[in-house]
Length: 575
Ligand code: ATP
Ligand code: MG
Image (cartoon, rainbow, N blue to C red; front, side, top):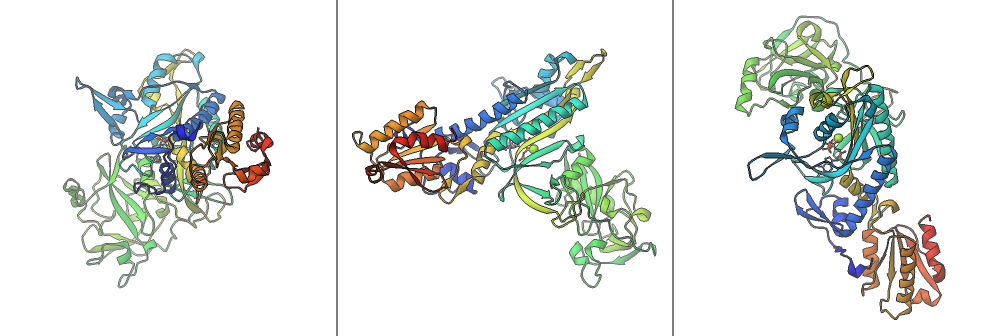
């Protein structure tokens, strides 16, 4: 490709819309343009890089035995109603109407479609196992689209879905995808690490996210350097000890606490109850049903864990500002700040307590009477706990549950997710097969996603310097940029550039010839900004010595003999 024939609209300054480095570089290097918030056009160079990521994904999925298909983005809402996600995923669903007022869903993911396909096609154990994948556009009505391709409304995902006859088979399929993902990210030049992820109501430990360490990531990952434990904070646990038991002692005693409505206030004089001897009582609504959630005063509730444990599709704190929620506080007899689970808790309300409170006594909590608290509270004696769960959020420095070393927390970008689904979708959408014994059974499923466009941007977030992008060779839009500093067609410099260009092109190298009549500084700056892995500089001065410049992006210049330039480039490319 000749630069003058391409479209590479590089920018000196990043548009104000770009908040993070990789987003700025996507725009500045002329790879991407915004149409609307969370909706982008790939320019030629951006698309080339994207296609390379896709190709790596495709090769590794094929290698793992998955079959490529292409499912529609436009989906009938009925299958979403059948799976139950028409309601539970409503926040992210884009719905459109056709001219006859019929509603359609724009697919945010394809479990419903692929399971419907399996219901029609995979009716016998003889046809199983199968793993279908596609590389396709997804639509999600994200509350906050941001950071360019990282969180978009429309983006490209590789999604795969495995169907097995047994649990063990499903585990083997899961393993294969896990291994394929490791290879994919490695081939893309991206450093990732797998972490245990939330499995929601399905439970178990068969969900891993592939994370790219980055300050701009939207996930917190808890990890242990000593033993390698790593989990999304939504799922992470630690070996933190339970609350120290004290003498059971006196019965519950009510005491006045006028105006004291926070853990912090109660921990100060005159009451001076340390936060770790307080019980925080929260009112939550799980699918609109009220419940109490008890957490130690110095801990934070983890809503993802709460959601997983309750199995509810929607979980939210009751809100005093919401008139509909006020009835729940009235039922307890107090407002937040004086809530507790000792007295006046409606008999049908579940009371969920965090494991760290198990066995705790001599605790202090609200009395369900504004301006009063109870002290000497024993969880076992005085509170009707209906469920004990791990509900707290791990903090840095807590001991690892496996090896007791101090846990750390870092920010990361989720680029991929592998998940053993079990039979949830196959049961709801009728993906049954006839087994060897003649019985009809639901397929055991797994689902596996890679954010292809997010992965592309994560590469840029990880591979850059002050001058621009440093593309890993495997995903670079062009591997080589030829930069002649004289472009007159009859000049020796340009003629050599043309020769090298022709030879590299013939050798199958992706090469771009910067034939612009621009100052050297402009050309070098652009080549560095776009980030081509190898730049070949051709100028009159070095050519007089019979040499050309070879510069790996981010590395030092070396000089090679003009006639050996092609061989040197091929060698640098590992050919
Ligand atoms: P997130 O937690 O970041 O919203 P998710 O867990 O909802 O993502 P999955 O349903 O697991 O995402 O989708 C598979 C992959 O698709 C993710 O690992 C991520 O790389 C990518 N992805 C998800 N949502 C978006 C988005 N809005 N924009 C770009 N990529 C996305
Ligand atoms: Mg995910």
